[in-house]
Amino acid sequence: MALIAILLSILIERFLGSLEEMRRFDWFDALLAWVRGFSWSDGAVGAAAAVGVPALAVMLAAHLFNALWWPLAFLFALLVLIYCLGPKDLEAQVEAFLDARERGDDESAWLHARDLLGDAEVTNSRQLTRAMMEAVLVDANERFLGIFFWFVVLGPAGALLYRLSSQLSGGLDGDSDFAAAARRLHYLLAWLPARLTALCYALSGNFVEAMHHWRLHVSEWQEEGRTILVASGFGALRFLPEPEEETEVDLAEENSYVHEAVALVRRAVIVGLAVLALLTLAGWAS
Image (cartoon, rainbow, N blue to C red; front, side, top):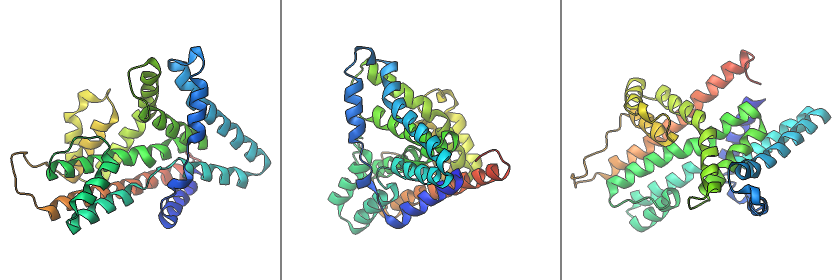
């Protein structure tokens, strides 16, 4: 069921376009405000309650639908999975940036880049190319591959758990106990999916180079998965950033690097689905 649901979610996302408008989390903001109103919420207990209660509710609903009629449970799981993806279409964002860049519309290109990069500091075109490639490699795990992993492991409750932990950790500023606990929770949930995604990158490109780059960062395995994802992805693409002192930039070549990063993500998705199909046939995944 998990494999079919994931395939359908990809097809629906592809043919219906961005479903960002349907992915509202106002209810989660209200729940978070309510939880944080309690004295015990400023720490790990509060963060776990904020994301755990909705996930538990989805788990109970899934069991109820399954007891009534299994197609209802499947439809419910599919809807939850689609809701948890994104929320924005990563490939559409990248294509909008590249289209503006190829037209020579620098202002529009920078606006599209900022939509993806946020407040990341970028001072020249070559840095922008690298930052966009890093964003593609990292956000692919954050927006859908990590969600697919937890959907396979825990069903719709797992997908919602990961999405809410990402929403929570990314929407908090400061060094409060609650913010630190939220970031730690997301780090724990993202640790294994990030490394499996990095392995898919290696299998989808130059495996030897990807493993070489990965080994260079072996001491950072306890850190956030971003470094591992970028190292494996750059190795798989055999991408070597140009020295900063080089001033001449070939925009066509720079854009091709970003295109290759997107293509690598597509191949990684195919590799992951193939592995899931084999596990399903072997009876190790439902």
